[in-house]
Every structure is written in C-alpha cells, then in structure tokens.
Length: 288
Image (tube, rainbow, N blue to C red; front, side, top):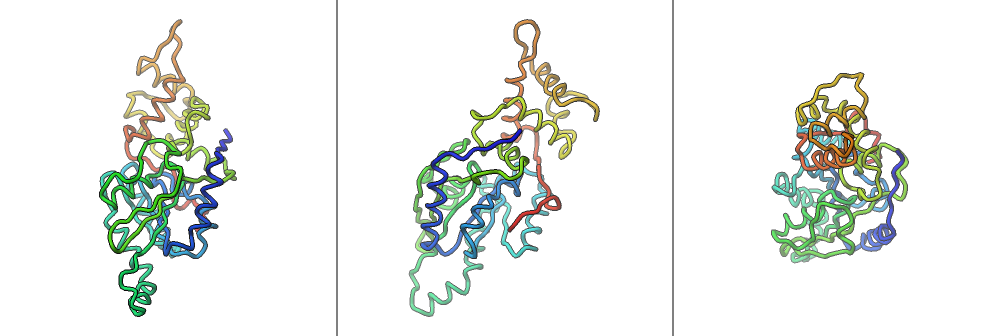
C-alpha cells in the first residue's frame, strides 16, 4: 500500500520555512513519539541546516515509555537535544524553554555583552501534520492562541506568538515530504492520523496496522477486543473477529469490515489500545 499525500499548501509551507528561517534563532521540531523516525520529515532537516534545534517526542503518553527513553538517548548520542513531551497534559513541556536557552547560551551571552538585554529569543515550530504543534504553543503560551484539532492540515498560515518578554514563537503549518521514499513511512503516518483518512483505503490500512501491532504489542488487540488468535491467523480474520465482537453486522450476516477498520484506527489514536510504540531506535536509519 503505497501512500503519497502532498497538498498544494505544503509547497507554500516549505517556502515559508525557508524564507523565515533567518528571522529565528532556533527551531523546535515536533515529532510523534510513537513513530519518531516516520514523523521526522527529512525535508525539514535539509531546510533547517545547522540552525540550533530541540527535538520533541510529543504524544509520549501514547507511546511505550521505555521505548521513548531509548529514542531520547539515541538522539542524545547524535548530538541532538530531544525531550519527551505530552502537550495536552504539559508533561515534559517545562524542559523546552530551558533547553533552548542552553543551546543558545553563547548567542544569548553575546547579546548581553552588546547591551541587547531586551532581545527576545525567536523560535520556529515545525513538524509534520497532527503531531501537536498548536497544542505545544497553547501549552507554552498558557492560552488557546493556536487552533487545535485532531486532524491534519488545520494550521494553514504562519503565526507569531509572544510567550513573554524573552520568547517569541513562529508557528508553521504541518508539512510532509513531497514523496515518501519508504512505504513504511507513509503507513506509519497514516496509522497515527497525520494523513487524511479521506484519501485512504481504511480496510487495507487497518489490516496492515493489525500486522504491525501484532509484532510491536502482541497482546494489545487481544486485550482490547477480547479475542484469541495465534501466529497463523490471517490479518483479515482478526479484523472480522473484532467486527463480530463489536456487533458490526450488516444484512445477510456479513461483517462490516469498513466500520471495524475505522474503529480500530480511531481506538489506536485515542489510546484505547494502550501505549504503543511502532518504531524502535535500533531499527532507525535516521539522517539526523
């Protein structure tokens, strides 16, 4: 299942990031802790270049905590400051601004020496769709200043948000790579809702998700839906088991696999299947 999604406004976002990079001192790159590799757009890394950055593994409350810790250590070994966050609850968010001050320590000291005491630190927030950029800004600003919805593509223009006398944030729309070189990247982004469901074959996607989660969290589906299966059970059979268990039966006794597929994906995204990480750092070949 080869998924590609790059709406026209994303080309504008790439230009927006490139054109405004000179206005900021650092970058906050927001990723999804469940899929740190797939949610880290390689195009953003190219655009940012050597600009100082802090990497957030957001939605960490949805991911396996031990796996997320391993990702943080992995990025640390690559010389990147990474922080596990949950912008909805605020967990980890108190570490973000101190981390930015730390990586900009020399620059801030130069401003002080030049008498630029009132100079605000300007930070750009970037990331793929639906990883929580707007929720992050609302958490840091203490208000509902950025529009937040649990679907991709809500933020369509840049927004400057002043946090206090010391910090300003530039919010940017979510942007994906123009083409996913690896099929698994598109799939992972689709699992987590970073790609609009409207363009997807949700039944096929759900069966691939079932196959994926059977490896990463073998008991998650069994526990949630009260079903039993073994390694030889086909993914379609499991999909049908879940549909039958939920009573999704249509005329003639046939199971509504389309509705079942939507429920499985929705319940993964809403944490009802438990804390699941779909990617491990040892499997990563991330170009940091």
